[in-house]
Image (cartoon, rainbow, N blue to C red; front, side, top):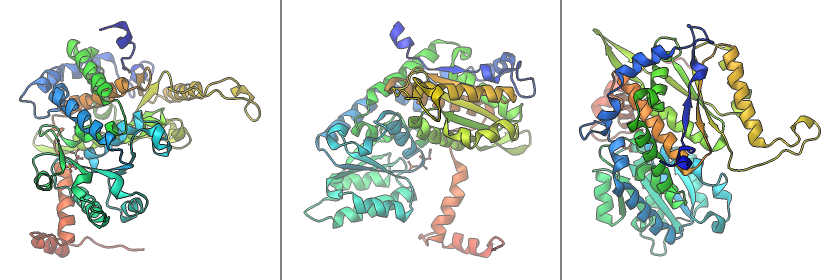
Length: 464
Ligand code: PA5
């Protein structure tokens, strides 16, 4: 590895979590971490294996995933659609959105078509009729591309969004064939069969990768690639991170250490709320992606002796500096039940010096990025003085390479945390009950008994 690429490595700084100086009630020792690292030593080796239940490590190594996605995206860019509507939910939407926002121009949709070089991008990840209805009022579907992402192909919100858009395409007239406007990223599913029958383009959602771990597959890569994001750089960064941590010991693996600290904080230090606070607007959606990754992967029922108990940290997103005027008061003086991780960027991509003058003469000549970094350090200092533990993912800059590293580092961290809790991080049985009840309530065939059961056991009402 060259010196140049090493200088692009991201790092996890854990000094803000240590006791001393925080004290044993709030801080951890390197010994605490070592004990947990011993328990998770096998995780990475297992993730490389063909038998691993989760395939996100294997998928990263498959060259065809990146190559096929790039080819498809290049083809669609040549067709110059004006808009791309990405329809998906949870892991089938958040990764693509986080990647796009991290790496596309911060005002991408507002740029001129020539500057943008790709379509405007819109994410539809809800069934709120206001959102999709309003979007269809302003885009010309006849000139648009629709990217439908669903591994199972059966997710009700995605099916509903797609059907509304397909119907609108069918009504668009002038010989519009809806299938010519759609790309489906899906697994072995009824959606895939339908797309095949209609002759629409299909990208493979790898069968061994779950939604929230799918950002480095077509699910997360295709939409940003059509917008011109350098997805080869992203995947390259993730691969570099994987080879870096595969060569070292768990103690040299930032994801393993972050997981061990998170586990000790939650389980031994009574700090179950884990805040992720990037100091970069472009990384705010990444914090929302992280919340889903941690929440859905680790919030599980676990066996402890003869009992089932609920485990898992509660992830909370925040954004610096904005939340310094909102949640930071709570973080500094409220309950000592939080572990806060910053994401800081050493060099912003843009320079914007402040002119100075009233009411803040002291700002003259300071760059906005310098102020951002000073405020992050200031917040870390304030938290340390209040004995509140913190950590920091440090990025040299925001680039495809560093962002790829960071996404993958979080996925690995989650896998390590899952192993420490002794749970399956790759399923989500807890979301099933609500889904089945909703099917019953909208009158889906086969759910009549379920509906009767719901009606017979209506919860108490208390309407004020
Ligand atoms: O992370 C997950 O597994 C979930 O959030 C899924 O991505 C989400 O439920 C959507 O599933 P699907 O891609 O099957 O439509």
